[in-house]
Image (cartoon, rainbow, N blue to C red; front, side):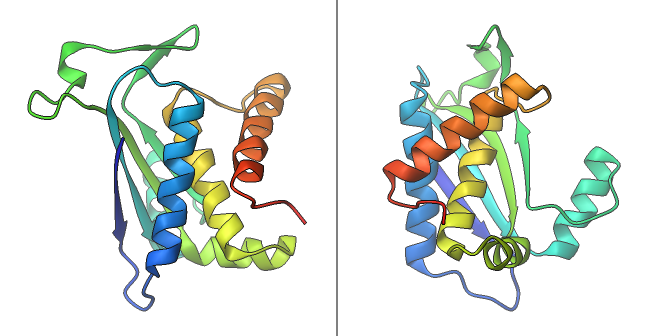
Length: 162
């Protein structure tokens, strides 16, 4: 899997350690979910103001959120419905979509929940990629499944909830 991480934060540099952790979280999630094709995705790290604008534009919600996902693949009964146009002819990879994370919100939530920023950013990355892989949390059962998968992945990474 290829992952590209973009830093849109003007006032904050993101350490290579944090970038590696986000990449590890996303790749582990894709691997554990057994996505059957070579794939790629992008993660953009931004601030509350920028994610608020996207949240308003795409979801009609005028407030900052922690993570947004923009999946490009359709799923039917949990299976990806890959069309020829979904595969890059040069690389052979399927582009799963984009994940936008508010680093500002991640810092706020880490402090509020009493765990590390590393855990929170990894959680948001995993949450975002699960959306790209067709998961949602619209029903109680779906939420339970998705949150269980998130915890399993974070625990495997040694990023335990306090």
